[in-house]
Image (cartoon, rainbow, N blue to C red; front, side, top):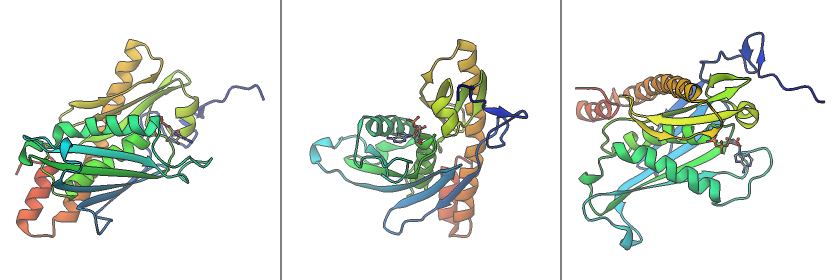
Length: 252
Ligand code: ADP
């Protein structure tokens, strides 16, 4: 079959979305009893869980920083998360995703409050459909707030891509794998970008449009993250609620 795959049918994408539409999002907070903070997130067919532990003592001790906490992030894809069984354990890709995800979150964590300690973030991908690093960062950001880790703001993350010459928001697997480019970003609610990657080829103008579209996606995700946290904590003691709302980036 030589016919080229078309990513659009009757003006909409293969899953019925417009070019500027995110996949459906579901977020649950506090799903793990033994973590200090946790979050389960669905972004389309991606399913991820984030667990946060800390601030706690650093092991091994030589990693300890005298003036601040260190942040560790481990991204792991379950072997059953993709169609063909993935070989378990870390690999080049998961090391890269762990590194860029940590760098996406670290700028908002107030690490100077907790010298000589560590904040550990674990992200487990249960089901993958492109955009797992962005789903992991979104879930980790909510889990950090759930753990009560002081932060300047939440971080929201999503990608834009190019398919059939068109810039689209939040590419699903077929668009990511067979499309022309993929640009995942992460940002603060104020618009400061903490992650920017690009896979594929784009002109300068296309890159600008992709980043603008992904930023619009992040703003929508931020509203969902914030609402989930406010809903979870608003019935609790006023101080706890205020703290959670402050972490969601709202002036009080
Ligand atoms: P992201 O998930 O952040 O978009 P990639 O662009 O590297 O990261 O991967 C895109 C998608 O390709 C993944 O979400 C997953 O569906 C698939 N994929 C990645 N690594 C593997 C793998 N080792 N085996 C099978 N599928 C994979």
